[in-house]
Amino acid sequence: MKVTTRIYLDAALQNVKSVAFFTFLQVLIARLGASNFEIALSNSLPPLFCAISLAFLTRQLPITRGVFLASGYIRQCAFLCMAFSVLLPNPIPYLLIFWSVNAVAVMISGAQQPAIMRRWVEPHQFPGIFSMNKLIGIVIVTIGSFGIGAILDATNVFFPKNYFVSMLIGCIATFAGMSLIAELAPHEKKPIRFTMVKPFQECDRKIWWMGLNNIGVAMVAPLFIIYHVKVLGLTNTQIAYFVVTAGVLSALLLPLARRLMERFSSGKVYSAAVAAMALCVIPYGFVSQLWLLIVMQGLIGLCQSVYEVSSQSMMMEEAGKHKKEMAYFSDFQLVMNAGNSIGAFVAGALVAALPLWGCFMIIAATRLLFFGTIYMKPRPLPYKQKSVRLRP
Image (cartoon, rainbow, N blue to C red; front, side, top):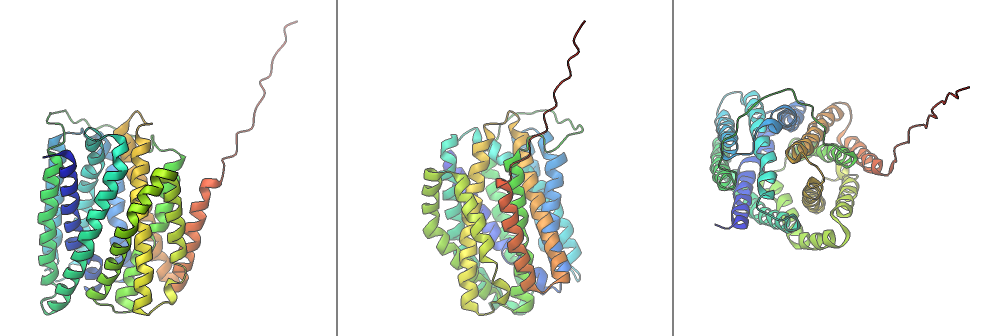
């Protein structure tokens, strides 16, 4: 099987997992009676444990098939435990615990996969591969979210067992995709030695700037769930309309974004996506009409797709400038996940003190502030003239 075929099949299967397992997971948590703080915590804890894994564990593991498979097996067990915990009387704590365990394992495979791909793929091919992966994901998520959302609504009488069946489908898909990439990993045995590590050694100013932007991007996710499910009471099918609209727009315009990256650079397209997402959330708390929410979510989803592809392309472009490649991938993912965790936690604090429309306004202003930090040049250190003693 060709390398690109494996990569595209893995992308397809991982997106089946995403739509079957995660698209409605936040909706499930809200409908199980979670508080606003627990919803924010469900967005904050997984990336927090991802960051801990990246800081102290992931970078110390060798890139081998055995390590990649072991992390995949732990990830699979955590997925199954999350699915079965839905059937318990009080599932929220168990969901959060096993989701955190999954986050530790998924970062091992998530950080190793780019390094494995770089052994088989030329750097100039990555924008095309990432764009194709995104298009595959858009098609699957667009069709699957609408289909699964409609099925979940039709089988609501079996709640939460209907969600349990959907999550099992996601478990099978992610295991199959992981097995495809594992065959590309080096078939060798290397000793594993754990020592004290210093994270952030491969971080430069651009990574910190992207991490700040990620904080702003992550702040809206829990607020969307609270607004759509707890305030407006939307059904799964209505929420699926958001995913479908974002998917159609992304499928139509992502090839254009790819050409713009090739012409102007990934960094400029990334900057445009970040600024556009900040502007899109300003009026969000004042909107309750479904058709207008669909339009706004479509635009936000399009910007999110461009943001993800351009940031991945920037990561792979910058990797060649770092001698410790695995440490660079770990630090990059560490900063991004730390931003996700901080953003969701701050959103939980905001929603406890302010109305939702005020939260969206503050988030938009914060995003623009973080985005503007790239133009702030660091002040040079004052020059100290060395004193010279003259000999008589």
